[in-house]
Length: 565
Image 1: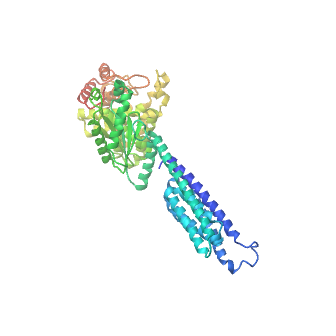
Image 2: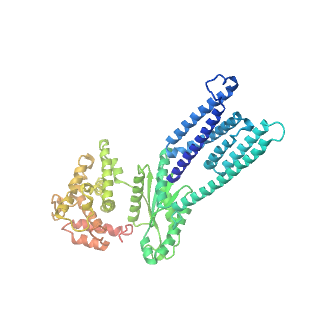
Image 3: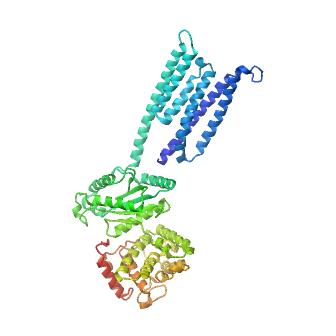
């Protein structure tokens, strides 16, 4: 249930509670109206014993109702629905019994308090709707007519005739109020539908996605189940829009919404996250099942014909999908969204039209270090999240450098230990930027001497952060020296040539190549060809010339799987 609906129901419960308390107050007046004028005289004897019992029971019931209502108001909003539905039925039966008892002791068929049934009729109609309200009205009508028949023995039963009219009032009240509640509910549902649905695609919108994801995470916690999440992006959609115009792009987005709805399960939640990005919440779905669903969606899109798709870079419209799973890969809503987004980024980087699960080098790292350092690795993960918040480029850059280094490790056939060291170093090489301000990291224009000197401290800062972790001792040189230049003019130690560790020379080339081919506030990205030319130009000065040649060969061998356009 959406939060706005929970708030509405809470206010409705408050209103119904007030209505019932008012009926109790009137019931109290009925009870005490039957007492003698002087409560202290002895005339209130055995003849009024029944009144005493009724009065005491009524007072006790009133106190009980007050306690119950107070307890209901103390419950959390998401607990009210479950508890209230059960207690309200019992409460309605008891209220009708009490009203009947009050009528009996206040004159039976001659009682002027038969209207009390209106309180429960109104309450049930507002709370449960037309059908329940009409049922309560009919039962109340039958009750007062039976009382009339039992209480009047001879002649024309004028009370019965009058109460036929009252019964009609009960039914008409329930019908009118029930019909209004029905119209109001339909209007509310239509309004919520319009507020929650993306008009263009017919799937849920971003706001509904955020609320629904919070609720599904809560349900997963309560039921101890997993929750899958897919992030989907249409490949080269900007190219399609630029080529055919936004109207044609809107038609494509609508068609994607239809494809997704046809290829997911009934309880899955599809939403347009923004632009050409979609998200799908998969309740009770593990990572393997989520990947399977993602591939089914990818195949469905690839096998669907779109007008003009033959002019796309890959000859057709495709999607890339990132997969994450709660609580396996993420511990809260924010982490779940970020990990699915990171997985999507990885899928886009690997030349698109693929499904990628979230993967973190730090999770692998936890398996290789002593138990006493686990908390530090968790802290490092938090630091990287902080860097990501400061500068999204640094995080995305790190992810790409890890991929380049993994490909270089395969290309150079490194040992398992060197592969692992290179991967960890690539992931942690910029961690020292945690101590650099956001203004410096994202500055547009030339850095001042003071700002440049501050930025140059990040290798030593990063080495200091991980220095105490024994398992990362072989990674320290990669963090500390990845800005050393082959000619000795780099920093922080001014190492040159073979003084720079072999793995550092690999990382240096991968780090610089990605920096050149990425957009930054202070420079426009270079093309693949321009970046390769820059690597060659800087051979023997900034980079190991042999490593540059190997890196270029690696790129050429993997050009078909990397998005280097």
